[in-house]
Image 1 (cartoon, rainbow, N blue to C red):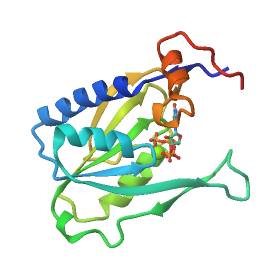
Image 2: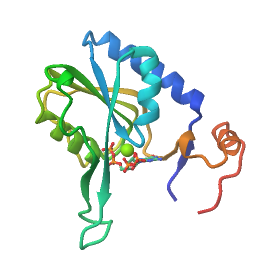
Image 3: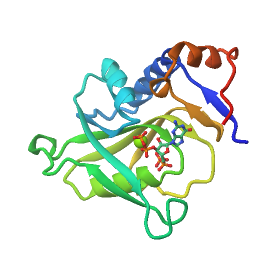
Image 4: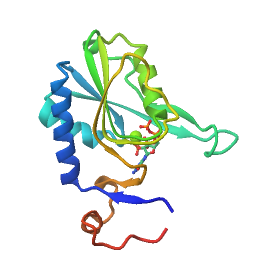
Length: 179
Ligand code: G4P
Ligand code: MG
């Protein structure tokens, strides 16, 4: 069985404040964030409290091919910055997502964004899972993560149907629903 962990909004907020500190300490001034939806939306909004830069958004999804979802499923753009806003030309952009898991989505998004005319692309994730990565970060991309975590299934507060039960589980009290 996959091990699971629950994080509260407060946990997420605290880690994002630390992440913002790391980004600021890098000395690179990012002009805008590009959030990868849906997981990157809430982290980007909270990061904005600390970074004070605007948020743009893209979304991707996995599509099944003839072999089904398990093997060779393909990533596609659901929503993109197309055309890329002119005011982002030559700017430093920070791509934001909630989790660096397989890196397949990150690799896809970063490769696509590298085709654009940015000065510098950084990537910031709330949680960096320590595991073998199927995807690779393209060269020349600065990487920031809030915290490193084990390769467990993370339950995010924004996915909770019952936030009180979620918070109890995060505190180590509640009963997880059987699969
Ligand atoms: P990566 O490049 O950022 O590592 O992402 P990867 O393609 O490996 O992730 C596939 C999907 O699985 C992503 O959702 C990601 O958010 C989700 N995911 C990976 N690990 C976890 C986890 O521990 N907990 C949760 N809740 N989700 C996880 P997506 O297709 O981008 O969907 P969306 O929810 O962002 O819309
Ligand atoms: Mg996502």
